Structures are given as structure tokens and as C-alpha cells.
Image (cartoon, rainbow, N blue to C red; front, side, top):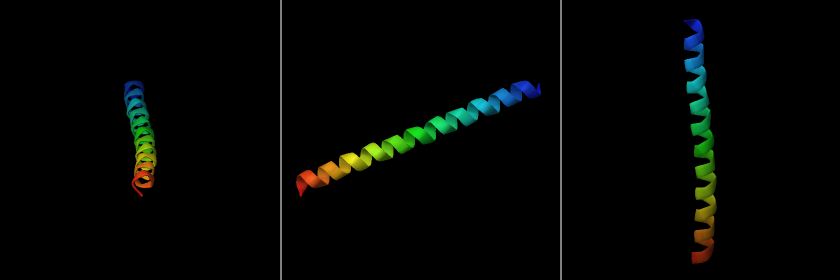
Length: 42
């Protein structure tokens, strides 16, 4: 039983890690897009 619980928590942690990584990438892409947009308008 402890093994199953362990596996479950590990999966959840991996999911959280992936989500955080994805968010960082999105923010990075958004910042670049915004910068280029401002540069183009200005």
C-alpha cells in the first residue's frame, strides 16, 4: 500500500513540475511577443 501512495505522490509532483515549467515557458514567450509588439508599434 505505501508503495502505491508513493507512486501517486511522485506522479502528482511530476505533473506540478511540468505545469510550472510550462508556465515559465509561456511567460517567456509572452514577454518576447509583448516586447516585439511594443518595439513594432514604437
